[in-house]
Structure formats: structure tokens, C-alpha cells
Image (cartoon, rainbow, N blue to C red):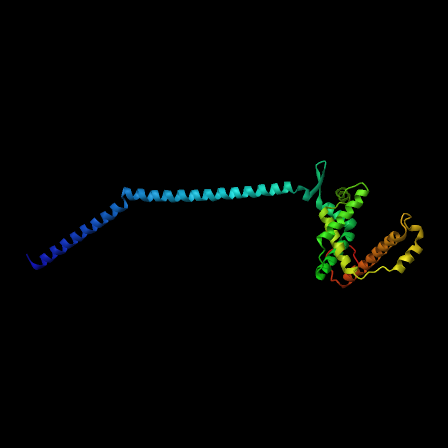
Length: 256
């Protein structure tokens, strides 16, 4: 056999072996990719993933529904509990809203109410700046005095408060406020004996007939003291208003 023939046979043999090897590898890859176990595993994994995502979506979807329902229930519950905040009366099914009443009240008494609130704020600021604190015992003593006076008229303090549309806490606040003002403006007020004599002389027809002597003079002294305190308080409040910087955002025709 010639040398060329041997080389051709060897080359053909190598090609055949290479082809066999390639076929074998391809077959192995095909077997791996088409293995039932592998396919089942991959399919199961996909199903599990799809199942998990579905459950997650359902879970959060339900959570959103629950939260939305709770919010709606809270809103309607609050509206029911606070219905008197928005509606003050219902006439044959037609509501009268609170803001309608407030608007009417502002038209009728807005100027007076706002003026009182401004004055009260100025007074409280001045009291705080002066560092005045009213003793609890002093307040209780004044309340006891009021209760005694009302009892003599046949009514209780609670009944009087209801008639005035006040609470006990509001009464205490007013007493403390007045006591603090008295400490600020009344500390230098003095009623002289000459003033008492002059008052008795000028007001004989108005004096209580059941009082005489020292009792009468003490009653007159207290009346004159109250008058002086009232005048001093008015002057003091006016000075607070004159010195204050007040910005009115709604015009009720106020002027000081």
C-alpha cells in the first residue's frame, strides 16, 4: 500500500472517530435536556414560583381590602360619634349645619366676643409676664363665699353655673384671673376716711338702713374700693390695648 493511501485511511479514521465522539456528546446533551426527572424538576419549580407569586399577590390584595375597609369604618364611625360637631339640628330630615349657626353668631355677636377674647389674651400675657400666681386657698375661699351667698338665695352653685352656661372649671379660671388682675392694679389703691365720710354724706338716700356705725362705714369702704379697682382695671386694660400689636384677620368693625 502506498504512503498516500495510508494517510487517507488514517484521516478517514480520525473523521469517523471525531464524528462518533460528536454524536456521543450531542446524544448526552440531548439525554440531559430531555431527562424526565429534570423536566419534572423544572416544571415543579415553575409551578412553585407561580404559586408563591399568586399567594403573595392575593395576600397583599386582601391586606389592601382590609385596610381600606377599616379606614372606611373609622371614617363613618367618627362622623357618627361627632355628628353634633357638624350638625346642630335636623328639621324634617333637613340638617342645620354647625357652620351655619357659627356664621349667624359671628354676625350677631362677633365683634363683642372677639373684643373680649383679645382683652383676655392681653391680660393673661401681662399676668404671665409679671409672674403672678394665685394661691389655691384663695380661690377656694372665694368659691366658698359664693356658695354661701347663693345658698342664702335658695340655689346651689351648680344650679347657678347651669343658668349662666358656665362650668366649675371656667368659674375657677375667672376667679383666678380676677384675683391676679387685682394684685396687679389694686396693690396701691387706698380708701381714705375722708372719702368714706363724703360718700355717706352724698348718698344718704341710697345707704342700707339696717347698717349703722362701723358696719356702715365698712360697707361703704368696700363699695368705694370696688369702684376704684374697676376704674384702675379699665385704665390698665386700655393701656395694654394701646401698647399691643394686634392684627385682625377678620373685620368685625373693632376699634379700641
